Structure formats: C-alpha cells, structure tokens
Length: 331
Image 1: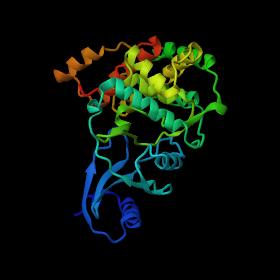
Image 2: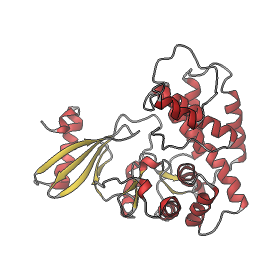
Image 3: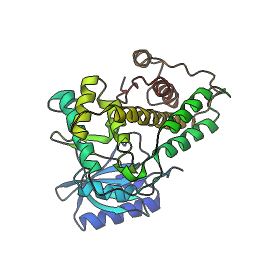
Image 4: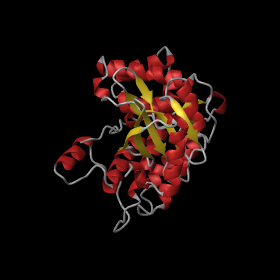
C-alpha cells in the first residue's frame, strides 16, 4: 500500500501524474506523509533516484483564496528564495519541489542577531524579484476576514465594537499605495521560514501576492525581532539604513493590520467548534499564564479553544500596540 492511497481517487491520480512528470520511470523508494503545520495542504516526502522531493497537494480552497499562488511560487523559486520547483499545476493545485530538511531556527549560526540580519536580507531579496501578481489591497483582505469573524457569532453583540472602531481609525490613517507594492509572502511566520543548516528558505506560498513592502517586515518583526536591538538589525538589513520616523509610523499601522489578520485566522479556526454561548469578554491571559495552563493540562495548544485564547491575545496586541505573544507557542 502506498502512502498516497489515503488520498481521494482524483487527487491520487493527479499526484501520480505529477510524479511521473518529475521522476519519469525512476523507482520510488519511499513516500512519507509529513506534517504541514497550519496549512490544509497534504504534504509528502518522495525519495526517488537518490533525490528527495516534496509533493504538495492543496486542501479545500478558502473563500479568500489567492489565485496567484503558483505564479508567485515560480518567481520565488527562480530567485532561489523558495526551494527549486519542478512541477506545478494550477488546475489540480499540485506541486513538486525540492525537499529541504528543516533544522531548528534556534541553531542559526550567530543566534538571534544573525538570524534577524539574514531575515532582513531575505525580505529585501524577495522584494527585488520581478513583481508578483496583484490580488487585493492588504487592508481590504484584513477587513474581509474580520467581517467574517464578526458574522460567526463567536462574540456577543457589542463586544467587538471597540475593535471595529480601531480598525476604522487605522484604515482612515493608512493610505494604500499600489504603485509601491512589491512581491510579498504575506505569511512569513516561523513555520514558513526554513533553515537547512546553512541558509534560509521561505515556504508555503498560499498567501503570496504583491502588496505593501511593510507587511512581511511587520510579520517577521513580531516573530523574530522582539527587542529594540533585534528590530534595528532587521530594519537595517532590509532597508540598508534605520527606518525614519514617517516609515516607522506607517509600520505601526501595517503591524496593526497584520496582527488583526492573524486574529481573524485564529478566530475563524475557533469558530469551527461548537460553543455553548457567545463570548462576552475580550480578556486574555499573558503568555506566561497560557504556558502554565498548557503545562497543567488545562489548555491544549492544538485545539480550537486554544486558538480562541490566542486570538484574544493577538487582539490585545492589535488594540494596545503591544508585543504579540509570538508564534513560537510550543508551550
């Protein structure tokens, strides 16, 4: 029995067709399912002919699905930012690329300062590629996702009013600039930054399209540059100099939008679980309190209930412009 036999018949056939295109008649030595983190895609490591490939089969498309995923992936792969791409079929949503063995980011040589510098340089390289296709303005996609959250009934009437007002103030202050948009990953979390023991790669390009150059900077900064010193290193490596005050002010607006985007992702996930009644509070624990609850077994990080708590924690960051809890949440 092949590991691909777990796939529905149509997906199984498209997977085999993709592999025939890439490896021809070479014998497949092993097919190993691998964890995909937060993505809905099915991922398999394929060992054949002395080489290792990643077979990626997308899951059910989201209503906000970006139609330019594969065009962006091709550009990033050709620029050496994403692993080498051998095959991509936009109709069947199947891709085959190099399999790169992940090493812990904590082992990056030189520690957090060197990692922040490497990430700033990686973002600069990404933004210098031929432009990805445009999709929608970033504030608009954040607003669409947030509107979905407001329709789920997760919260009692009136609870989210302060959040809605804050979003409106940010959108009024933020001026969308299509002319200066650049190639962007738009989901540059630690799970999507791959360290192979030598260099960094960006993976999982589902959300990649052309947008504000500060979007990736904001997301990477929240995850990897959580002190003023690391933030300065990241910004200098990205821009070649420190950010001036107007750019810092714009980054604060963009950072609020990226935080609300992930609030939307987390609350959309928590809304899939039944609830006895709508939530009446936005009170959120600290990261230390969440870690203690996880260690005591009161919270399981991989559950919708935990995502609901994390959504509140990110919402607090959105409202108060304080540090997020981060995405390294293996507490």
